[in-house]
Image 1 (spheres, rainbow, N blue to C red):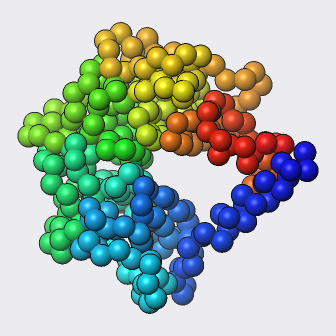
Image 2 (cartoon, rainbow, N blue to C red):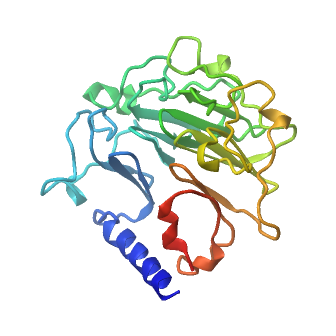
Length: 309
C-alpha cells in the first residue's frame, strides 16, 4: 500500500514537471501527445505544437524540430495558423498528424498522410510547406449533412461524430477493421473516398453517441445512455469483450451485432480514454488525487501499475 502511494505521487510529479510552460497571458486548456510531438490547446482557442516535425505535424510550414533548443518555447513558439476567424473547439493528436474541430463546425487535419488519414482524398503530407497551412489548408469534406462536433485521431486514421442524428464517419488505414465498415479497405486517400461517398459507421439501431475515442488500432464510443462499444483489433483484450477477437473487419460484426462492453455493476462511465493497447473508463473522477474513483476496465499495460491503491 505504501509503495502504491509513492507510485501515485511520483506519477503526478512527472506529469507536473513535463507540463508545458505557457506563454504570457495564456492558460492551458488541454494537452495531447503524439508519437514524437506534443500539442496544447489554450483557453483562447489557439494551438501550439513542439517536438519532431519530419512530416509537418507541428503545422508551422517546415520540418524543423522545436523544443530541443533555447528560445524555441514560451513566447518564441508561435500559434498555428488555421485561417482567418477560425477558433479551435477541439484538438485531436494522432501518431504523426493532428486534426482540429473549428467553429463552423469544420475539421482541418495536417501532418503525415500515408493512408488518407487527413481526409483530403490523396496521400500528400501537409504542414511541412508554408503554402499548406492557414487559408491553404482545406476543410475535410464529410458531406453536406454531416456537422462534426468531435474528432479523434489515432495511428493513421481518424473518426468524427456529427451533431446531427449522432452519426459517425471514419477514414484512413483500415487493415484491422478499425474504421468499422465491415471490411479492410482504406478510405480517404483516393478520389471518391470522402464527402457523400464516405458511409456512416453502423454502431447499432438508435444508438446516440456522446464520444468517440480512437487509439492504436481500435475505437470505442460512449453513448448517451452511458454504455460503451468498441471495434478494431482485439489483441490483448483491448476491446473488452472477454476475448482477443477483432471486430469491424467482417460483415455482421458492426451495427446491432456489436455488443456493449460489460462493465462492472454499479458503475456509470462518463468519459473514455484509450491507450496504446488498453482502454480506461473514467467513472466518477471528483479529484485527480482520489485515485480510488477511477476504474480501469481492461488492460495489459504495465503503465497502469501507477494507479494501484
